[in-house]
Image 1: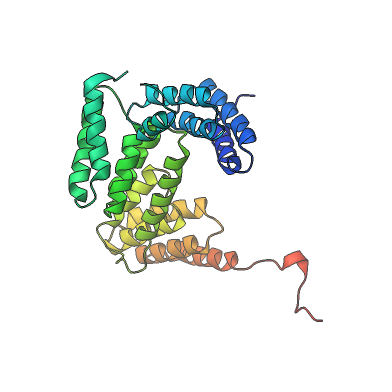
Image 2 (image 1 turned 90 degrees about the vertical axis):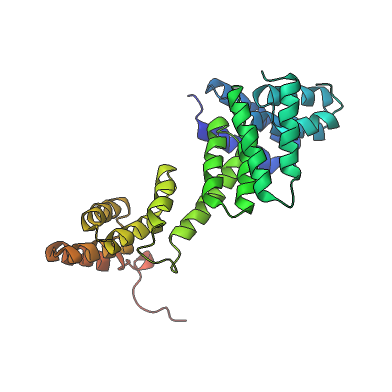
Length: 92
Length: 202
């Protein structure tokens, strides 16, 4: 059975709730939400940013930069992503 | 994808808008310029609409903030922070609409109500405010249609039946008014919890 937008939102909410105490599990929820969103034809810069911020906190720089690039490809005006890109020391 | 000096210029303008502390109107103007120029270049930014909504909210322009949040959600329907803000502003619009201090014939009511209905965020109190407005401005037919619909949407709400009774009475339809009053009376009667009657004794 295919996921709905509400399913994706539930996963995002779960990831947000878990991000402090269990960031690895939060990442699983976020990646699952990303897959479902893509299957639904949604490209969400905010979802990629949420994952980028989590990966940054987990010190997985290369993966975080990949996500930041996704955000900026979808929304080049996202100043939060630009700030994170600077913090990650990545070139534009 | 938007890149290069044009993007840099717009980002600089966006940062100036965010840094503008003293002059909120100037900040709003800058935000709107960024929105317009970005759109001209084929880019709709959920982020810009979201931060503009925050600025408008701080300026007390709640309806405009709501409009910008709708645009942000259209651009990025999975953005949780935008969803949270949207729900928050919708709740404050509902509270403003149903404010007991607001006169029933207040001219702002249809506009606020329309905003909430269009966004699917009107609740029972919002609809009741609109019924009261329709009655107060002598639009009894409109009030009747809305009140009848309310009793279908919220059959367990005493206020919906009471509103229908008031409208029907104002129209001279005493039969419907009496029936609605009877329904309102029944709504208030709850069966005892666990089927236990009487007073609890130690």
